[in-house]
Length: 284
Ligand code: C2E
Ligand code: MG
Ligand code: MG
Ligand code: MG
Image 1 (tube, protein in one colour):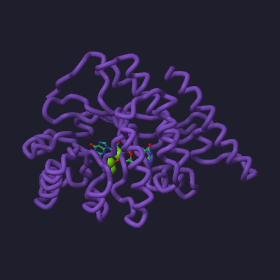
Image 2: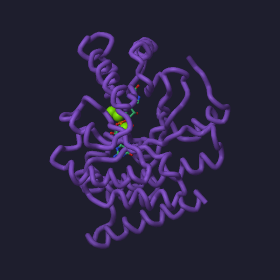
Image 3: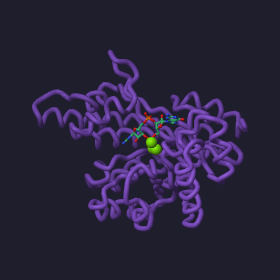
Image 4: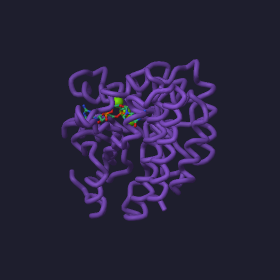
């Protein structure tokens, strides 16, 4: 059934691309053309418990398998997609693919599948309207339970857009979809956001994790965000964990979750499956 939904995805997205092309009297370019020709890929990176190393979630990260330039990371094409007004198309494609991947994974591996799949949504998409309806439609089509989806909201979402964005998020929240603030500490005005947005967790920007061992200020930010998270019942995830020393400090600070090259690189889903199939693996 998830397979079937996946097939529909391609059709729906292709239609959107074709319509865009028809309206502009041009053929699709950039990300829209990549979607049409099936060149976008999702890699998944594990998010692990710092206590028992269990994979609690997988984050979907988009790549472009470009016919000439090879495998492109998002910083090579997201800015251009944004300028071209194509981020919504990209986010819709990612959401649908990630939800159908997760539904298939659950059908195959049942309780060995992590609790959540994390999907990044851009600010532009959040303010473009109808996001809640889109997400609910995708959940319905793929059969994924709302509680299995985590949407990562950029912490940099502009305060002036807050009312419209919060309204969309509240609708989804009522349907059981949870949100996490991404890259916390990298933007601004974030503490207010925490009190008005229905978030369920905080991801600490990797800049702080990177600086934590040499800069007391960065260490303090990680500690304070985690303490605040504990008070507000918003568990923190440390991003960009690359060394055992960093993981040790995070454990000392009782940061509950971590993500980074040390704990697993973003890889095609199949690479994660063998670890999931063998049950809960403890590596440290
Ligand atoms: P993000 O959501 O904060 O994702 C984490 C980024 O950090 C990923 O980069 C990941 O590969 C990288 N990373 C993970 N562990 C480590 C580590 O230990 N060290 C270092 N140096 N980096 C690490 P990636 O995949 O290049 O994505 C960059 C950004 O692009 C993402 O940051 C997110 O903001 C955006 N992005 C990625 N996929 C999507 C998507 O599907 N939709 C949207 N709207 N944005 C996306
Ligand atoms: Mg993210
Ligand atoms: Mg992040
Ligand atoms: Mg980041």
